[in-house]
Image (cartoon, rainbow over all chains, first blue to last red; front, side, top):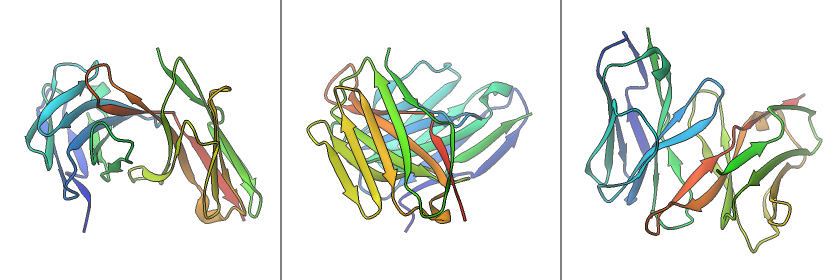
Amino acid sequence: DTAVSQTPKYLVTQMGNDKSIKCEQNLGHDTMYWYKQDSKKFLKIMFSYNNKELIINETVPNRFSPKSPDKAHLNLHINSLELGDSAVYFCASRYRAGGSETQYFGPGTRLLVL
Amino acid sequence: SQKIEQNSEALNIQEGKTATLTCNYTNYSPAYLQWYRQDPGRGPVFLLLIRENEKEKRKERLKVTFDTTLKQSLFHITASQPADSATYLCALDVPISSGSARQLTFGSGTQLTVLP
């Protein structure tokens, strides 16, 4: 019954590695997001896709590349991981990109780069 | 640029009292403002949404006010309980620069602890 799911929940890796985080929503929503939450709990938007089209692309290093194979999935690939990438990454979805509806968040992926 | 501030990083109150959290914003005219709750190790969960033409919204023990002149929202939890302890985030719902899409911009949150 999980509305927005993410895998993996925890990710510990070495600097310089490449890793991916996957997200799936079963709510039938058109829009999906990636957020980064740092150690001070600040939640910052990174990307958003609406019906597989990139609509928000905030100032994020180009080592981060989102990919949406269909509107129920939004993955995040990170190349050449750095220490500063350590954070919690949340996926979220929303019914429509232009509506006022709430966002539903996944449980988060805790990334630790050593 | 847009700025959202939640005045208290942490707030401790006694059980049974009313908790009041503040969210201020600048350089903005949001159409909507939302409040979320985040428990440790979990994603944020939606609580309430208030529109710019609404002064107040209630849901059970929760109440949100929205003053577009002061650019401020207040979030109240009445008869607080230890189970209300969590981080509360306000978020402004604003259009992005292109098209009709909107995005949420979050404040840094207030960690509420309700003491028994």
